[in-house]
Image 1 (cartoon, rainbow, N blue to C red):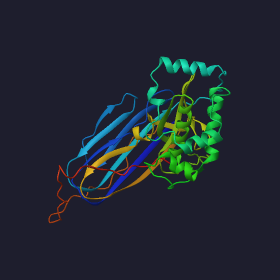
Image 2: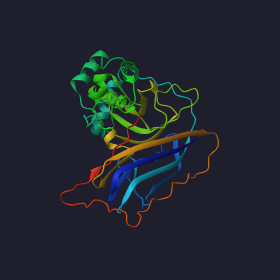
Image 3: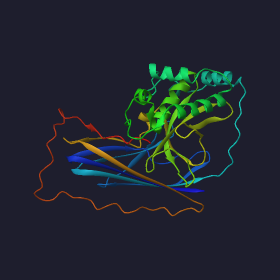
Image 4: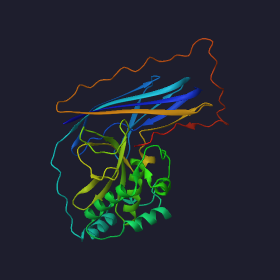
Length: 326
């Protein structure tokens, strides 16, 4: 099967800004059953877009707009082929815990084991861990499935309760959040029992019969845990699922701070607001790559008030508003 993903991000500035620098992690990965057939990225104002690949395999596109503008539009279009395969029946023995310890001792998993910015072991997290009986019991796969369902049942899915940079305690205190919060909480729980766990940023296809709780028109996030004989296996605590072929992987990292879809700064005395629209469509035949045209550029008009002067010493770059994964 094939997926077409359109991702449109608009940054609106309250005042004209003089420069923007941006990174985008929007290109789907090619690995396993997933293959990115085409990927295009456009910006308005136009920019020269460069790319590099991180050590985790994430492709990062980056660009600079060194001229005045009052909004920034980033549009991506991807075509992904997903091999259809029946879900295997995973089963591990209780002694797989020893195998995990050997893999950890012999492999390079430390980044996915230590607490990170959004996965700190707080008192509220430890209270939830006690409720869910987070300890080594059963076999690792069965326990992670139980914790995946436990996070789903203990927290209500509620958009706009937290923000992109909220610590997990905000969601834990209210027992409400979005997929980004659910993923961070499950990662933190798994790391407490020394299971390598990482954050996955991507897209989720919503069919007419889907019962997914994800907000339509947004990116998605879930968790991968490293298990003996299986490798990295995805768990979606927002939807109580073992990840399947409706999940499209884009980037992996310790937590959201490693893999935001957009991350950048701008120069100017302005506030920024972000709006996001995502469309994911599925087809049996390969779709044609292509773009919907971006709106025409708004050029600065003669006689228009100049952008506020920027002191490069006293005025630092200001961070763009991040887009929360829902």
